[in-house]
Length: 492
Image (cartoon, rainbow, N blue to C red; front, top):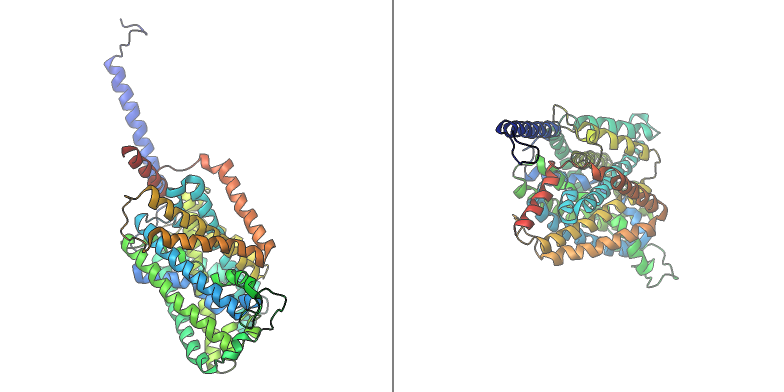
């Protein structure tokens, strides 16, 4: 008879231990499969053309309104220089994100990249900053939509909150029908908005007068002031957040990676194509609208392109089409915030109930909950303030994403990269420097708004530090990327 200390274990005990262990493993695997089965997006919904349309759609509203408030901060010269710098930053950043999205195609976008490079804290910080940007940007756009509806006297509406409620309810509803349907509707609206910009350029060209570019009174007390820089060199810095509005959210294209066909090829193509289109539209709108109406009048306009054209059929057409442009951006950024929320929730960084998808593979609560928060913010009616808050979240995320690109280039040079950034770390290093400048610039324009946004970011980080970092889901795609990276490092 074997004793307790003899070291002998009967064969029946061994078999039983194996059976129990195998049963527990299989049960754990089944639970993991069931968890992910309830949190799956529809794959293969978009090629590079739809993805490029998504990128343009995110941003197109920035051509129709919001950017012109930067004229009051820096004059035409200040805003022009800021726009050139910001355009360079976005182009460099997009090239960096094209590499990262091809290497790590998942619905988390920037959060996925930072999770691999900077660990759970860096990943969540990036995801939280992106989520702040995408939750607040639709609220700002909703206020602009309300302004357009009231100016057009549509449906006799004179109180904007009805419009805010209608656009949130309608477009969240369309997204609940599924990604393929939503992306196609978005692409159609974006094409209409681009046609409106073509009409604007054709008409504004005939009204252009170079004297209008520099009609803002010069502040003699500002250092380096002139007719070109009426508020001096400082005005360039203050105009940066409004220059960002020309390109804000184009970085959201990788959020569609899990729903794209061949994401390692199509996501880089889509985001680069979108950026090239936006460079053209931003330059045309900034120069022609200011030259047509004058920097002074345009700096306070809620409907800059229409006012630049004056009266007539073209102005009326652009007015209606401008509403389509605002709707396109609102519609697509709702998509973006839902995918960012979905990815963070699926990995356990946010409550896991937010990532459950419906029969159409749309994340229900990830669409609804941030929408309710955004609607509440839109009721302030402060479009410029909300714009600055969204820019703060965006600029902070850009800093973290560019750091991620550089870290991965240094730490994982052998990572599979189907697309490589031209210029490598020099390119993303330039974007990093300008992004840091942009973060500080938001405090120059509206320190209260930037301060509140920073406070919201800190609340997110506190939630992660005290609660969710202990409840991460190891088998989610983003966490698996990190596990694979650690395993490869150990093998090497």
